[in-house]
Image (tube, rainbow over all chains, first blue to last red; front, side, top):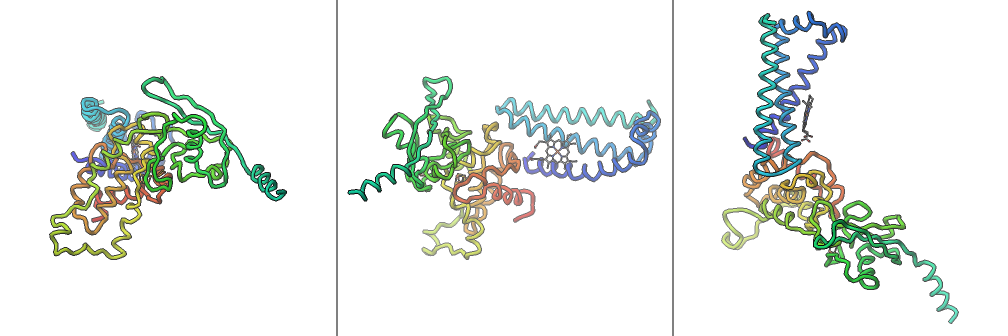
Length: 114
Length: 251
Ligand code: HEM
Ligand code: SF4
Ligand code: FES
């Protein structure tokens, strides 16, 4: 992929995350912080489909943004053909891994499998 | 006679001295660089380069330093002066307001010896962005006419044409310090200089060259390049303009 395409995604995910995380924080303000982390409330959030979809989107946006950011940092830290290939594919794999694991949690909870 | 001696006295009393600390390092023999100190007298107009040449003339001729024009034109005499990248011929001792002046080789450049550094990387990256007008026709073929430009078109790039390739911007850039493949602010500013030139037709090929993993996107807006440029070039601004083309805000 062209670097400019990757960076458009990087800036785009950051902007979208600002909007969605703002909504996420507003939703959390509907109750106290400790209450928000109670088991039943967390489960209820995942079962509320529109909110679960938004959490899933935030997961994807921040995983893409964060791991691409990590790739950038690592590419600037050290150079070399093999190292750079490892960094790029490693970050991509970690990104997919995190999204898969997070999605699994959201989907299983939503379907009442937990 | 009395008058002559009073002039001499006055001169002696206005003659000030500073300690010039010069970093000495020869990669062939030395493990690390060390400083040598010299007392140099200076006048209001004495430059750091003149002080170094004074040391070479009167104390130690083996100090390695690169210079040529002595008037901020050739771009040879860049070095760290009291921790900041500056041209030695364009920095007066009196403006530094310090009794001790430390000169070291520029950061982010390999040292040849003492204050002289290798410029290969700068020349390579500069060449990489095709620093010349690209077009199908040439001046010779097109009815022997010049390529006319309006003052407004000239304004688009003229400050970037002032670059003397001194490398101070590359030396100040934090990305240059760790990314050995980064194209650097000097070359990026020159990429913009040609892309913004109304006579040039090489925009797409240049944008392609800088749009790679160690290209323009590795600039993180530190802005140190523009702060140290002795010729009023603003590489950081040129980089943002180039980004504008790549992100679709400019055409
Ligand atoms: C939602 C608010 C956020 C915004 C507006 C934002 C914006 C940005 C921008 C513009 C850059 C590029 C900086 C540059 O090129 O110099 C960047 C880089 C980066 N971001 Fe974010 N980001 C946000 C959240 C996050 C989060 C939550 C993470 C961690 C998961 C993260 C991780 C990174 C990393 C690792 C980099 C690379 C470091 C760098 O380039 O300086 N960001 N971010
Ligand atoms: S942009 Fe300025 S600091 Fe950089 S090489 Fe050119 S003249 Fe020197
Ligand atoms: S000697 Fe030419 S720029 Fe300083």
